[in-house]
Image 1 (cartoon, rainbow, N blue to C red):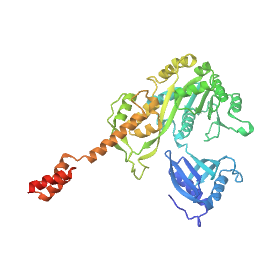
Image 2 (spheres, rainbow, N blue to C red; image 1 turned 180 degrees about the vertical axis):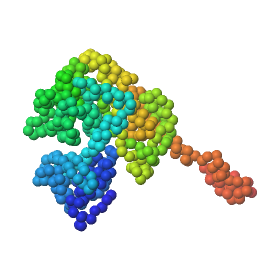
Image 3 (spheres, rainbow, N blue to C red; image 1 turned 45 degrees about the horizontal axis):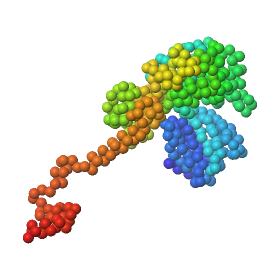
Image 4 (tube, rainbow, N blue to C red; image 1 turned 90 degrees about the horizontal axis):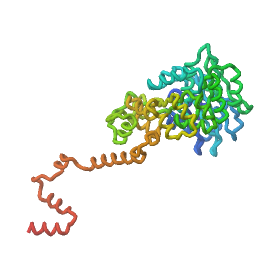
Amino acid sequence: MVTFDFAKTPITSIADHIIIHAAEKHASDIHFDPRDEGVVVRIRIDGDLQDYTIIPKTYERNLVTRLKLMANMNITESRLPQDGSIKGKFGSLDLDMRVSSLPTNEGEKIVVRILDYSRSLEGLESLDFSKENFEKIKRMIAVPNGIILVTGATGTGKSTTTYSIMQALNKKETNIITVEDPIEMNIEGLNQVQVNSDIGLDFATVLRSILRQDPNIILIGEIRDSETAKIAVRASITGHLVLSTIHTNNSLSTIERLLDMSVERYLLASALTGIISQRLAKRLCPKCRKKKETNPYEKKVFKLALDKDINEIYEADPKGCEECTNGYRGRIAVHEVLEIDDHIRNLINNEEVEKDELREKVYSDKTITLLQDGLMKVLDGRTSFDEIFRIIDIDNDIDDSEISVEKEIEEREKAAEENKTNEETPTEEKKKEDAPSEEQPAVEEKQTTLSSPNLATDANELEKKEG
């Protein structure tokens, strides 16, 4: 925890210092949490929140006001949530940030998201796609019309992937229009529209208008409702390439979600080009990572998912080093890329098809699942099995009675119990060292004999022998 001299240091300088420190540590978010004792400042690094400092209650109002002023928010309104943005130079860093305020029972909670699109500018090649998945994406974005969806939970890098694809498609001969809420990155050559629901400028309204703007490619920031989904699908079958994001877990659940949004089956079947699902795992520090033997549970997962017998993998060193935090540095994307073929289109269009049949075709040998891609990155030493276990529901990905959380816990407890037993059970050499020698004095033998459970019997027998 860092401490500041609040009596001598202006709150403006403290706020700037916190932002600069977080940016230098490659943090994604800064949390200002109101508590009884003051504002607890936490920064999210590689997906985990870490305590940074505490701002005393006396300076809480000044800090919140400072952050709101920088974000062009209403400093007199503390009863309603607000959104704002900060863009400017902090020290030697040019930063672009999004700010959100939320009224709580303890006061206003402020979250500052630090936007870093350096990975987007580096191109698709820098996004950790496997060779097979990268080839699929190149074929998908080469299709002149259709819809490509990037799926995943909040904070899994969907925007980075979509902007990278837009960078690859951004050419002089194409007219690209985006509909976003908010516009997260300004890209030269794109026509970007900011949604404003307060005046009726929502996704559906803007989409209807931009279809008359002769676009080649349309980016929809997020498909949130059935109306947006229907317009996006219809736009994709009228000669446009549509790119969008949706909050689903994998390829199969994405298809099911769109059907639940009342998108007609025949339209979805003809429009869908591909689905990119992704998660983020912590990246192992290459400097201090270490090898370990796989336990029985890990062996089973590798065998069932990759059909490989794996005896050794890398893991994080909890102590870490000067270049990492607890053995991890940065994050790596884990992907599942589904390229829609004619067989899958026919299954989507068939109302009588069973979910299991659709799953079997979606996850055929052509598709590398999230689990398989993650395990391959474990074998490469880029992430750990514990990280893949954390971000992916292995029970759901491997439909096998032997693989379950209960089984994994049982295996780990068994291994821990064996280690404890080995520590407590003396080895043969240790036994020999501890055994009494023939030259030891008689008093020691007497003491040893008297230590048996039946003390009275042993004592009587000893007296008879001595007599």
